[in-house]
Amino acid sequence: MNRNPIKNICCIGAGYVGGPTMAVIADKCPDLNIYVVDKNQSRIKAWNNNDLEKLPVYEPGLKEIIERVRFKNLFFTSDIIQNIRKADAIFISVNTPIKTSGLGAGKASNLRWVEACTKEIAEYAEGHTIVIEKSTLPVRTAEIIKKILNSKLNKNNIRKTFSILSNPEFLAEGTAIYDLEYPDRVLIGGEEEDAINQLKAIYEKWVDSKKILTTNLWSSELSKLVANAFLAQRISSINSISALCEKTGADINEVSRAVGFDSRIGAKFLKAGPGFGGSCFKKDILNLVYLSRYFGLKETADFWEQVISINKWQKERIYSIIVNKLFGNITNKKILILGFSFKANTNDIRESPAIEIAQYLLSEGANLFINDPKVDAEQIETSLNGIKGDLQKKDQNEYGNWSFEKDIYKAFRSADAAIIITEWEVYKTINWQKASNLMNSPAWIFDTRSIVNAEDVKSAGLEFWSVGNGNYI
Ligand code: NAD
Ligand code: UDX
Image 1 (cartoon, rainbow, N blue to C red):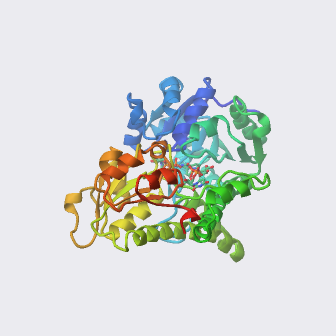
Image 2 (tube, rainbow, N blue to C red; image 1 turned 90 degrees about the vertical axis):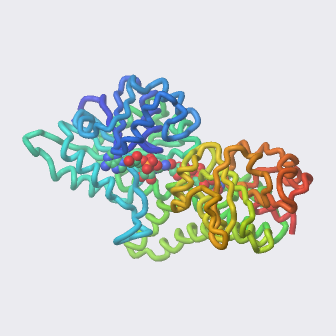
Image 3 (cartoon, rainbow, N blue to C red; image 1 turned 120 degrees about the vertical axis):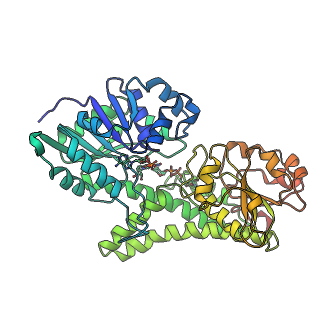
């Protein structure tokens, strides 16, 4: 049956995916009206802020699009019910973190937000609605969604029917707008041709139809988990080799380049670092591991679990090196953390390696000065379990404390060490002679991203370590 084309879209979840994704769809499809709804009112307020510097998500290129489409055909609102009611298509774009308690704690996805908003859709949708999974979900979640939606059919004599599609999002933070405008592929999984074609027609406004792949629901749900697992596996592979480089005199950047030149391997995602962060990789691999164990596939589960173990080990390895280089004692030493977001060009700190490294250094009694161009002190405080960023309150004997410092050079003053954790552009152009003049002596620079020139740092009289750099054994 061919239904009318989609005109009104509702997206539930105004987060790092819902916001940018809907902004790009609104920009490319001026004929559509898009309502992004969220139960978090302060987030909605921030999306509606006149000051575009205060949007809740920082992404290069995002504020320019928001300026073009907001209040025209893109609206951020907390009126969830009304917008579910009038939508022809609803994107579910809510968070799906790992469960922290109960069955599957630390392993399985917490689907309570998906369930809650599906129940609202079941209750309030009218006529025919295409429900689209945009969140990353365990395989066969569409079955649960279908059951919930079908439980309220024809309630209160309001006719309603649903089609369900899976349309996972492959954007990476920091390059979200580019990834959305020029995707490698768009994936649509579903059972009903008409619904698939309607969603396809939207993407075809700017994506070559050859790049729009259609599959069954379960392949689509699983492909998203597998794509993230493969990407993360490359990072753990190269990080495991970075340790070997440090022991043997090899240089991880040279090894990555030599290996990545093989077109069968490819050059991307071979940059050694402090371990992958972000809200997706660990969660999606844990999900894959959980599913594999559930279906009795121990070897599959063990294989993918190792990607996470290496990632944890890389962070532990790095902070042990830092403590050892600082003579095994960092109590009351001033250490500068350069970068707190999980990667450059985002204000997101979820699963950032900086959190675990900072927590460890604090537990050894260090005084941390934390700098980041886009992350604020409030976010840092939450991630450090509410330890107030107040060095006056430092426990003299045991636990360290921290302070947020916007001015990098001020932060270098009397520091014993600086650790580059995020590869922000601004850290690539630090004047090391100026930094050295301000720091204590001896002072160390630890470059966990391998972004600065070793000779510049060393010739400024600073001690230097960088990940996977075996030149100094
Ligand atoms: P997020 O936490 O930034 O945003 C989710 C939003 O959903 C929150 O603002 C929350 O308030 C809202 N929400 C939750 N339940 C709701 C409900 N019942 N009604 C209304 N609003 C509700 O999460 P995110 O980073 O945007 O990720 C969303 C999904 O997309 C996840 O499944 C994630 O795995 C997936 N994903 C994320 C990325 C990424 O880079 N962040 C990339 C691809 C896929
Ligand atoms: C990832 C996927 O790339 C994206 O397709 C998916 O939709 C969501 O998850 P994201 O987590 O936003 O995106 O960023 P990504 O660029 O993948 O980086 C993840 C982590 O890996 C970051 O901490 C990054 O610094 C690290 N990384 C990435 C490396 O350490 N080395 C690399 O070579 C690449």
